[in-house]
Image 1 (tube, rainbow, N blue to C red):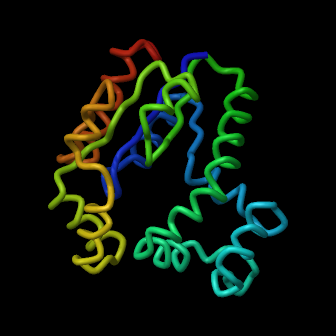
Image 2 (image 1 turned 135 degrees about the vertical axis):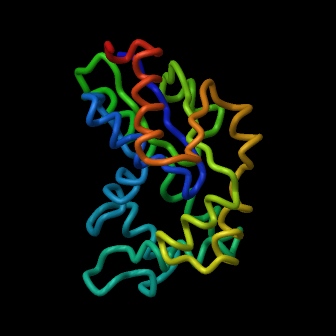
Image 3 (image 1 turned 120 degrees about the vertical axis):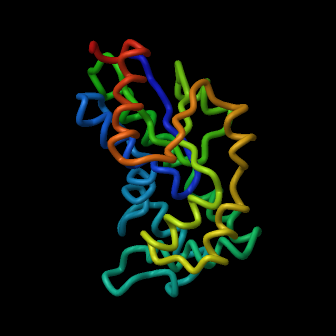
Length: 198
């Protein structure tokens, strides 16, 4: 099975790209969804997060209040490291398990925080980045997700830059136009890459 990573910064449009790939018949594993799945109530990671951060991180239904936890760790490097120590291993193990369970010629892993060591860990044949200029990402976060501009810029500043990300990947999809233009770019790339026929 050929495995491809799709990465990109916040507000870049990874979800739109992976939804288009699904529509073209490509199997997609979303690391964000995996992160939610491995921390649901009753899992070891859920209990470890409660032990580390207290019941203040729980929503009314007993699940992790992800936006609240994100706000906590975003402003505290020590807390972020603690979160990562708890969640990275189960997330990685579950992604590997889901890949092994697939019976498909091609699989895509949507991985927001791609690092070079992930190529070998997951056997990525290619890594694609969805990119937008920072000002456009900020506008989309403010208009589409309700971020305050300062918070949107702070979130972007905490990630690797577009240049740094581009240096780590094989192909770049610039998402600066319309939705239809992005769809066409994805369609052309899957044909060019031999994932599906034209």
